[in-house]
Amino acid sequence: MDLSIIIPAYNEKGNVSILYRELKPVVDGITKKHEIIFIDDGSTDSTYQDLLDLKKKDSNVKIIKFRKNFGQTAAMDAGFKNANGNVIVAMDADLQNDPKDIPNLLGKIDEGYEVVSGWRQKRKDSFSKRVISRIANVIRKHFTGETIHDSGCSLKAYRKECFKGLDLYGEMHRFIPALLRWRGFRIGEVKVNHRPRKHGKTKYSISRILKGALDLFVVLFWQKYSTRPIHLFGGLGILSGVAGFIILLYLAIVRLFLGVPIGNRPLLMLGMLLAILGVQLLIFGLVADILIKNYYKDSVPYSIERIE
Image (cartoon, rainbow, N blue to C red; front, side, top):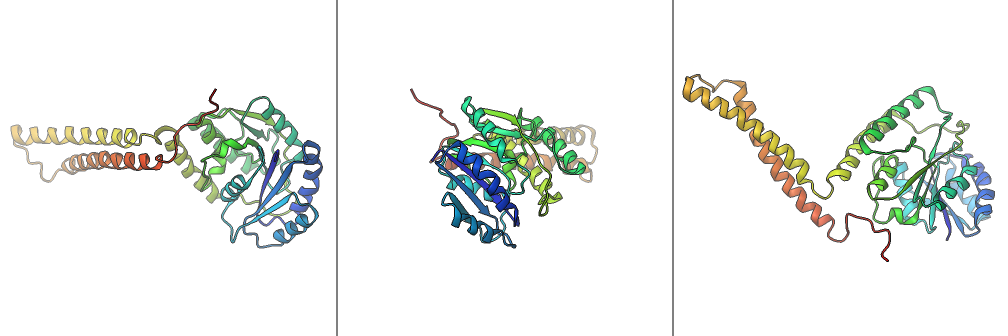
């Protein structure tokens, strides 16, 4: 299989049929060895029936049906794990991504990149959504070191090996380029057309922003401390323990040499709290280190491109 197109869909009745009609001639013009995988993410409308109608017409269409709505990240993870193509293209089902941009993504892949992200330079979303997305991109680039402009764009192309051993959860589909960059894959970018939504309702919400922010912390942890968590928790434990020791030493000097009572001083409680917290963080770091070693027991925390 040369090419897999994966398309998560949640309550996109009508849209999936239109998208297929736009997508099919583009993909046929690239290769006959392809598959179009729709993931029905627990739709409550007629999306699944529309997909069944498409499958009757085209044997290259495959359908993954979720029992309920698990979210876009879960749908994309299922698509990646069930794709057979050497190159995988992911896109939305809401018609805002333009299938005609796919050849440009694949052309960039042929230049030697393993990941190519779409850049919606002229977005057709609401003003508030564009502002929030712009802020999120700035924050994400600052903390993850990404160089691409629009990590949140679903239209992306990947080589299949990118997803070996990669599990997605939460809202982590937004951080796929950051995760793959951390593993050493080369990431490129091309400008793509972005179209306004004409049918259906957007799935964008405040809760997704909050979930994305929490997932950013997870990504940062895996990037910096996934192999040695003791460096994080142990470092914090040492800082806390040293601060507590200094406070308690000061109070001991005050009590022994100046005779000042310290039993009712809040500083005593703070010093004890910091000292105890420091010990706990050190122990937690050691336990986390042991768990990480067990996690990597059957895998390795690196990616080999080739052996010659």
